[in-house]
Length: 133
Image 1 (tube, rainbow, N blue to C red):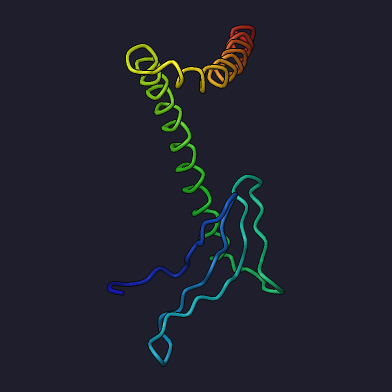
Image 2: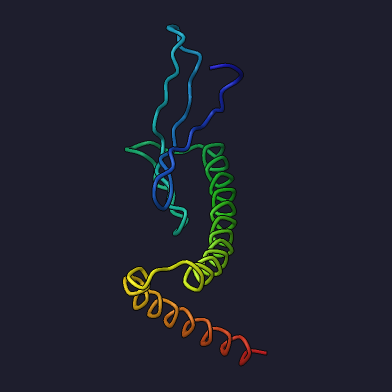
């Protein structure tokens, strides 16, 4: 590896990460990673690993990572929704212009139920927002 290594490494997992302190200054010139904590980005919980006590610097680094990670996940969520709108448009075009009867038979009920569910949720949420205004 080239360049300076970060002091902390976050192994992303569902709902958070395992946090490691990185040590590249060993005698054998090996990179050592010592797990120091587990974090949950949904609840904001930070649990030290084992009987370890986290330093103020550890906590600051973990909180900064959590803030950045939550922003990234929020950005990905809205991007996924925009892609879904595109995919719905492409699906409509496919159904109108290229789909065979057998293909339509295979997906029509599932698509109609999913779209009905989505429409119900969107209409209810829009009504809630309008009621607040």
